Image 1 (cartoon, rainbow, N blue to C red):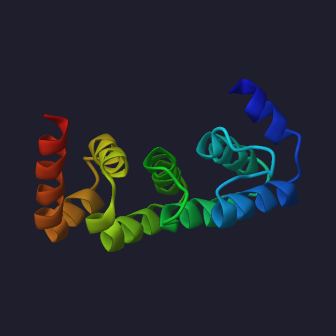
Image 2 (cartoon, rainbow, N blue to C red):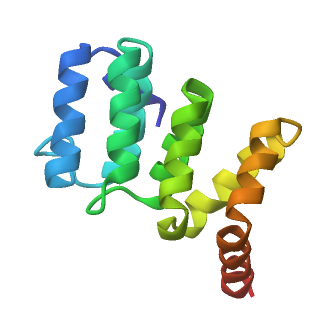
Length: 145
């Protein structure tokens, strides 16, 4: 996978954006790359983070909202990035999408909450969303059995 990162690090921000647009529209970054498109999108996004932070944030959100091609693993990574780059957007996203989150994305969300559990915003979020979170946790427990 280091070769993927090296490959995308050589590209310009505009090329990376074109690849991510292709992924979101077609499910692949380049016409000749179909093997692991979500891994490729991850490395493309990672490369974009060092070249264009604004576009990186935009594509994090686009991947989180994608209903066609993005895997839950990729979405969970984007959710984590969103927290570290824009906490307000992170909590807004989670608040608006908690019921539709897949298990890996929800698990990443819970990992982040554990990481930051001393913050007041987390306590407030739990109070406002306790029912939805409890239902998801129960579902995760059933799946893992």
